[in-house]
Image (cartoon, rainbow, N blue to C red; front, side):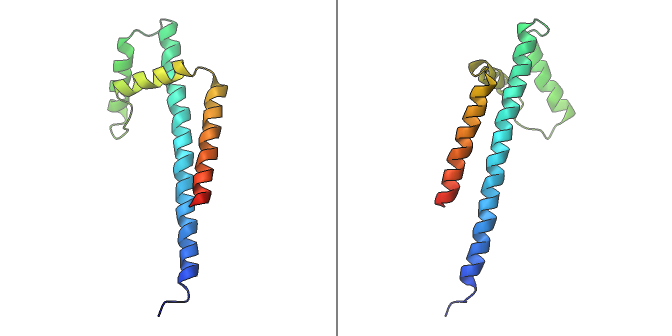
Length: 112
């Protein structure tokens, strides 16, 4: 014999899972914005000759020394952020990509 409350408990579990997926989607969108912004910052400094190529390695070392638990900001990732910005320098394009990502994630959430 099954518990008559199980369907209601399952609904609560669905609410929890949906909220978790929305949190992940929002976090991913914010990370994309952050990576683009960091890439822009680096690109702008390099293009105005404020920084030389070694500055990216120095930045990675600085971030690691200041925030040892912060992951994802090693030299090669900083180069990728710069490349991301330089590939999509128009903020409207990035905004459009985020909108599409958001729409796709909402569609996936509804289908679950």
